[in-house]
Length: 311
Image (cartoon, rainbow, N blue to C red; front, side, top):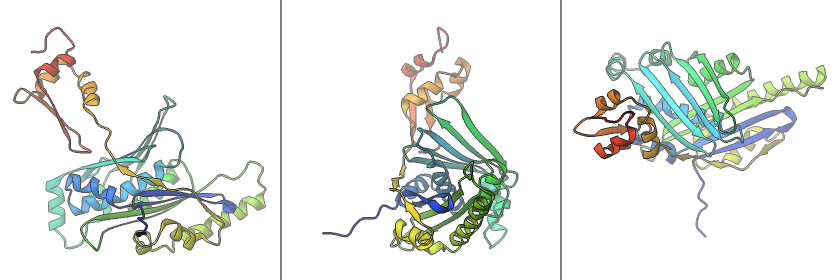
């Protein structure tokens, strides 16, 4: 019997029952690597995008409802935009946009890695939930504030959902090659029961700070150690806290763009706009997430016509 293969792209939900705390452990490896290598971004972009993917997965897998969850940083000074989409099935895609000239100048001006503020000055953090079962759309927009993405997320929760949250994130290039690894653990305190006494609420608060202290002991090496299973890591951290670990869910790098979806988008453009898109007798559309290009010739344009004639 050969060695057991440990999946390296998973999210593991868990509960610390007596303390009314829920959490998720995210581990990303080969699927994250597919996302980053598909784009060939600079290392500093890969670093922050890998962190954002891990955080996005941790946030989006907190519901059993079907839908799309988007975590986005937008409006930054040098890194203009980073977007992570996660479906309820665990399909993930991500991309980034930045000012290449400004980034090159910043990196050449110092031998040290740039600070988060240097890259994302004036940016906002946006979390959006689009559920299939309802027309309602939840969106929270908070100024990006902090020296790390973890700090920014803590600020986000204080300002938006006001949910007591603890978060640790780690990324690195695999020492055995150039593959990226990312991991995150998120803890969130559940609201007290409506009939809780003052003493019970105070005890839950004390338990919450104890759990945050335990979370703070985890090291980056532990988070990213492939030889350390998710269950082993969680029990190592919270074995005295009555932890209940739920089955792991697989995370897959997958873009949901398609020729049909692009056709639907193009059909909403006006005739002059469609004409402006034509280059060498074709309209070409490249998905920013997966870099796949769809081309449409004259026969296809008829589908997009709003009037009797396009050309």
